[in-house]
Image (cartoon, rainbow, N blue to C red; front, side, top):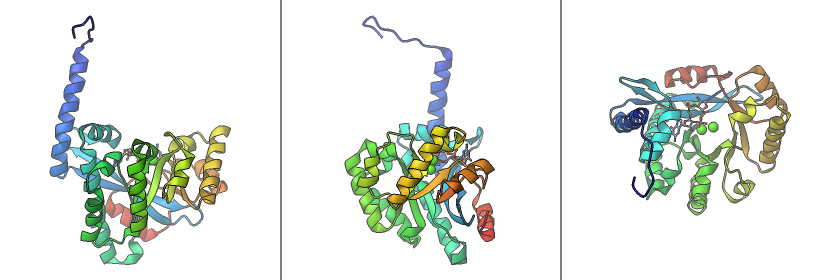
Length: 275
Ligand code: C2E
Ligand code: CA
Ligand code: CA
């Protein structure tokens, strides 16, 4: 590199970067060529066990590489600026899905949550783009919730404050995802229009630990007093479920109830209504 500095270069590094580059261009193609699809994971009322909503999770079936987990390609999409396009693709897909469900009868429709990245809200006219997807499919706003993280708020508090006020005004709900893991600031709950808190699965997973229980209890109580719905994520066992019931969490989501499933299967679950 000159100037008495150097950088170590290894063949594996080259490999990694090439792979990343290939994945990135593959992801661009995936968006156009229908390699992405969406799975739905139910959210269940703790008291009645009824499915009250679901989270839409994006999936990528790579023609050569098979299933690539979102934990891998979403960060890549963030780096390459593709993540807003993915968000819009998912929202569009969800709206189209909801439209056909509404046509089939309102008893088989629940609100769907869509994950959005910070980059979406930095786009010019993001409001018009997102709302036109709802309008085109005549989706009532209360059937959509956006999941954002604390780090999205922290990136630009001013823009996000306006964005969340706008969504609130429109009647679109907002959930704060992975709550407790980011730069949690309790003042966010006061300053911003938040409808739902999703307690991060790391706390649920640590439920044998007194400290984790204390944190969960505290988040639930706080949410109740602020009139915010609270969801426990990553429910994997009966024990997790019992604990969250005792702590009076409103809703739960996790493999113990159902994995994320394709839309046909999700409709089957909705027909049964209760998990
Ligand atoms: P997330 O938003 O926190 O989504 C929940 C993740 O937890 C999902 O992983 C889900 O399959 C997983 N999960 C659900 N129940 C359990 C459980 O009982 N135990 C455990 N260990 N995990 C459980 P997934 O689908 O692999 O997604 C990973 C992350 O990728 C998501 O975390 C989200 O940050 C991101 N992601 C997924 N879909 C989208 C999308 O459409 N847009 C954006 N921007 N990000 C997405
Ligand atoms: Ca989420
Ligand atoms: Ca989460």
